[in-house]
Image (tube, rainbow, N blue to C red; front, side, top):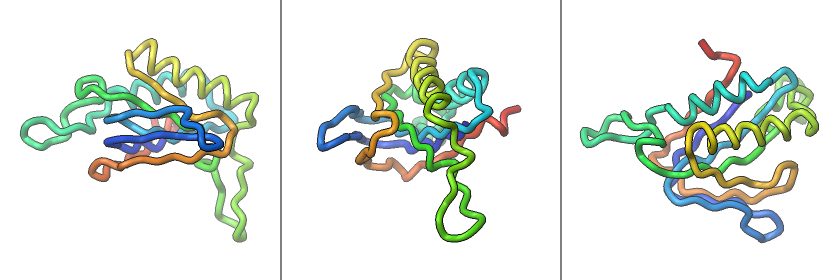
Length: 150
């Protein structure tokens, strides 16, 4: 599982010019899943997202998590995070999980953030062509991968 976290001041996602999710301050999460991801990966990454200290304290150091800072999450499924560009000019997406595997895991990830970590989670639409708009705060962009867990 691979998640790109973008700290944002404001963000939204729309499908066919209709907003499906919008947040003010928080994270935009681009969520990619691969074939061998499991609920263990989902729980690990959700905990990491909720607990990463990416918000500044009074001294200007990144010492607060999103749960301490307050804020919401905009979760967008993105199979292209598993693009293989090592050969040719057209990326291969063979490492991305098929929809029947990815969708339940993405939904479980969003529920884990909501139910276990108490975060407000808005979403895009799985498998749809989406327009994502955000104001990146910082900019702060972090990549979390479950395969690098300790």
